[in-house]
Image 1: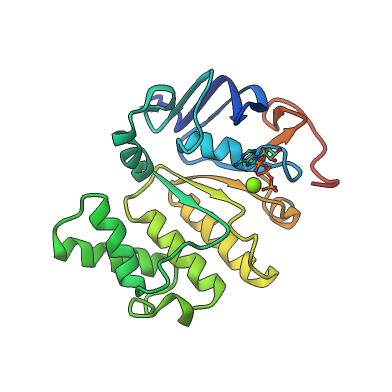
Image 2 (image 1 turned 90 degrees about the horizontal axis):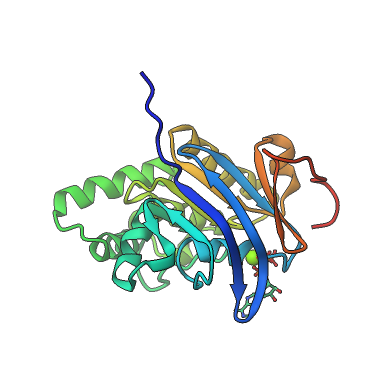
Length: 236
Ligand SMILES: Nc1ncnc2c1ncn2[C@@H]1O[C@H](COP(=O)(O)OP(=O)(O)OP(=O)(O)O)[C@@H](O)[C@H]1O
Ligand SMILES: [Mg+2]
């Protein structure tokens, strides 16, 4: 028997603000467990602002946003780390500590998110590194890794706490096409194993090769390919 499960993300009648500017107005959408969703739109159209609102990095002024059971409108600052444990956030610039090894980078996050048992930490570290194809990189410094490998470490870091969804803001923006394809395939693999993915991208090739539900920021609105047809190609 199937049970209805709550969406991972639910946004209702929400405006997205940057300071006093409403970047997106009256938007609404849901993302279910295990879904794969692209977020597109020209530069400055509001993709990053929307994502930041979802992970409580921009204030929610009006509307209702629920992410992984957290009500973003009234989330307390002490709960934000717990919210971010349930979502994995990945940016285009890799943001690893440059002066620490891969292991130290990942241990730092585990400690900060409440892991204490050394043996469990070691096992989890090995698991996530294997998962991203970097089983042998544990003792490397970030500068000893290529850009693509560094991004894999960031993805491994995002996976540590078994997130319900990966929120990725142009995760391949700084990578060359071949390396980008590898990272994209990794997102697909992770998605196939049940983790939802919301990925902002300017890369049409991904959408052509792997068509999936697409949200588009356009002139202050958020279009949803589930609800309406819109032009995917063109300049953005
Ligand atoms: N920190 C900020 N303070 C004030 N305004 C901002 C800030 N960041 C972005 N904006 C403005 O908000 C609007 C939306 O920007 P946003 O970064 O969300 O766009 P984007 O779709 O992510 O663009 P890109 O594809 O270039 O990443 C733009 O008009 C931008 O100038
Ligand atoms: Mg952006």
